[in-house]
Image (cartoon, rainbow, N blue to C red):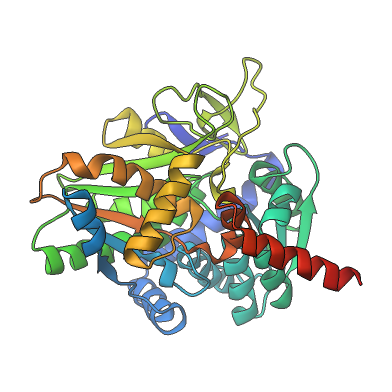
Length: 409
């Protein structure tokens, strides 16, 4: 265990000795790039020309009027290339891979957005690419699997364990141990061993930098609250970073699933989550684990939020009182998605809809002088099967049935 990358009592790098040199190489490359005054401008230019940044901050006048409380602004990470905030991290790591001279990238993915973003980056930079994805997530995120494969990535369904995100991460680490000389692991969230939490947060901080400048220009003041969904924590860290030194309340929203009292959820930091501190997958944080330290199964309607752990930086922010964490149930999330679609014509991903759900609970109690930002970390194109099922849409069911009959004929 290396004594670096701690945020109060969370974080660290609990890695096998065989990977120590690889992590040292990665940390050195990241530190060198971060200290290079030309690197961030290079990264911003790439994100502007390739991904479409800066993403807008959209005033949500209809939702503001509907709830009659604070003014609502939505940070539009769904307008990034590949449809989510994930591009911010993978393109930055792609620049590091070029600096390190490696030729292959691997990644884990749950909702598939990180997998698509990594495959996109690999295609642009000419890297070989392998994506690990839990078998359950492969089934419910088939559109993203299709695009990963079209871009030349090899998608490997993981059939062990709960067959979701944590199992995909385990398989990616096994691959990296075997192929570390040629391969870089593009970890998708602000978790894992140091330097990943800090590095992913660094690239995602572009969200917060933009949002802070935009809200000052449009609202004439800083927001009173900023809402973001929390799986591993990368989009939350991204937008929170822009307001860390301000008197702005930071609200992370986890997957409440069927309710925290059912055990069928993925909430680790919200009150009543029944998580505990442990060490797994190379770092120390809150995990959903039993008394023997075995990881429990998780559940969320959103494939990207069912991770068993959480960013050590977010765990630190909770422990120090800098951020507040809540949970939203599947039913609340689907209702929030439906309302946002009807009122604003925006289609947030099921992950992002957790942030909307919590904001909707609190907006009516806020002053009309208050301002909030909701981070729309992705769009729901990838969720069409899950969303249509949740809405119990009969025409969609008929369409799927007809397509199945067509292909089986």
